[in-house]
Image (cartoon, rainbow, N blue to C red; front, side, top):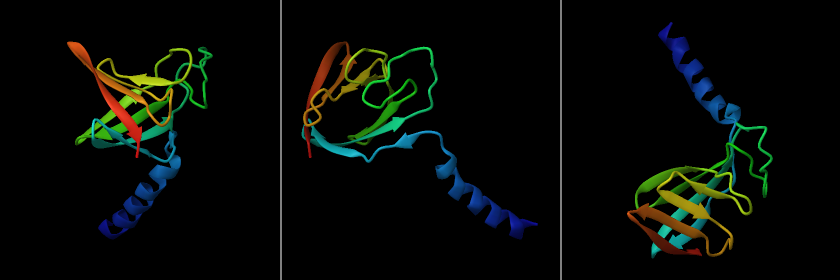
Length: 118
């Protein structure tokens, strides 16, 4: 029995990526405040179909994963009109200008980080 479990587990793990409902775009690379940042967009499953806020290919449930300074942030898409923005209430990301996205965090005051495409 244990000899059957290992191949089945390996098959299940390989199928998880194929079955996952969110699809990722290739990660974009930036320099933010002098440090490398990776931004990967995910078009998640629609979790609010009654909200007509599809913009630039993102839908409710979409999120972005930012990796910067040893921290990994998963920020959900906001329902703001216009170019998609992403926030968890502390961190905020928006790529109005894809070569110079807006990146900030609220720590009492708002701290902004200058970003440039790498």
